[in-house]
Structure formats: structure tokens, C-alpha cells
Amino acid sequence: MQFKHAFIAASLTLALAACGDNGQQAAADAAAKAKEAAAATAQKAQETAAAAQQAASQATQAAEQAKSGDMSGAAASAQGAAASGQAAATGAQETAATAAQGAADVKAAATGEKPAAEEPKKDDNGGH
Image 1: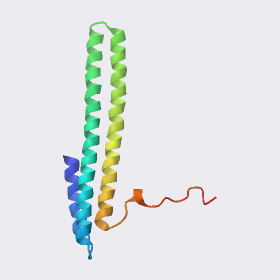
Image 2: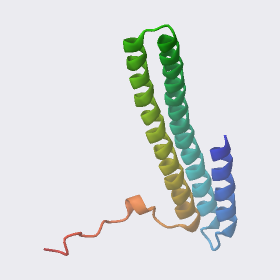
Image 3: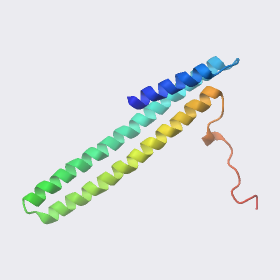
Image 4: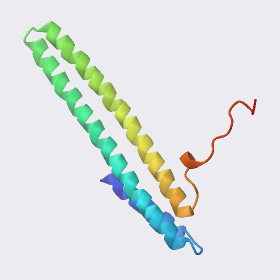
């Protein structure tokens, strides 16, 4: 929910800054982009939380298995916890990237610019 509020606040701020005849359209576009960005960010955050919860559960299981003397089971659970922890870390990075892209999209919509993803790409090999 915090991401959603941040995107809405950003879109409203940028929308109020929009001027000219396209101000209302820019505000509407920014609000729509903010809603899309908030939903995408919330989805990524939920996926990250699920991976973190799975990692915690597997780590707890590994500890219980180690306590009972099941070292091979503890090792397998610890390996699963590590993999889930890595997935959670990757998910956190993706959540941040999604939020940043959403903020850029909101800003572009508020100012009437095209988002960076829609701009034509430059030729990286110098035209050769």
C-alpha cells in the first residue's frame, strides 16, 4: 500500500505541475499510470514476500531437523532456504525496478513525454 500511495502522490504532484491545454489529459494519463504502476509493484512485492516466507519456513525446518539429528534433511532444507532467500532477494530487486519504472512512467505521462521504453533505441555499433 505504501508504494500505491507514493505513486498516487507523485502522479498528483506532477499532474498539478502540468500546464497548457493538455494539462487535464496529462493529469488523467499520470493517474492511470500511477494506478498501473502501483498494481505492478504490489504484485512484485507479494511475490517477494511469499519467497521470503518460504525461506523462513525452510530455515526453521532445517533447524528442527538439525536439532533432531537429521543432518542430511537439515542440509536439504537449508539449501532450499538459501534458494528461496535468493529468490526473495531477486524479487526485492525486481520490485524496486518495477517501482522505478512506474515512477518514470508517471512522470512521463504527467509531462506529456514518451516513456523511455517507447523511445527508439540508438544504434550501439556506431552505424557500422
